[in-house]
Image (cartoon, rainbow, N blue to C red; front, side, top):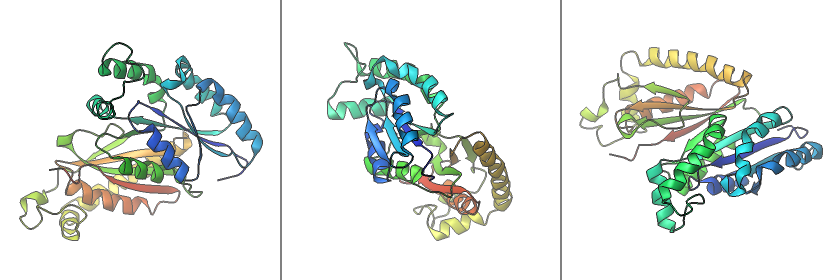
Length: 289
């Protein structure tokens, strides 16, 4: 990264969705992390980073409802800062059921719960963060992810890579487990024969060479992948022109174990050949039955 340009990552999102984990991952990736900064102080911090010209040019700032009512002012502040620095917003999210489970496991109230229930606090927070979620560059759904999986995903998505114009997460999933909440583009490979019905492949997954060979040898697979790569190339170039530097591409089959995993791996291999594209793989449902 250029030393005379300030690069800012704003980490925000739902309480309990993994903001602290994301902050730790970014710190491990070489970012200077500031936690629980009131959003109204962000412009002054960016002024310092821009003037510094070196040692503060890679900042990650965790901002959330703990900062008070000023969180509502964050969206217009971000838009104004994007004219002076490279600002990216990472929004951590999870389902209501997942957030409730996490709060109950640590026996702590939600910061906006007041005298109501956990779900009351979660719904208040969602309403307050709705606009901010809409302008985020990256939305990460941590439902079903443990701390280590969340750390790896964030670390890989924001690791320093001078050559990358856009960072792409390619995620396999199973439609029967629900669409990934953070997907920008969704592909459906249920048109392919399912290895589940082949006895010697049923208990393997799409990372196994026999399953991969089975899936990739099917009729129209190359036509599908060639078309997908062509479309994604145009899309990613457009994202870069619009200053959108991250994208999540979700590839789904029925269970997320065989076809989607094999196609995700092959698509990742092809996209890695594109100049300026950094690719991270994620297999959401590979261990679920």
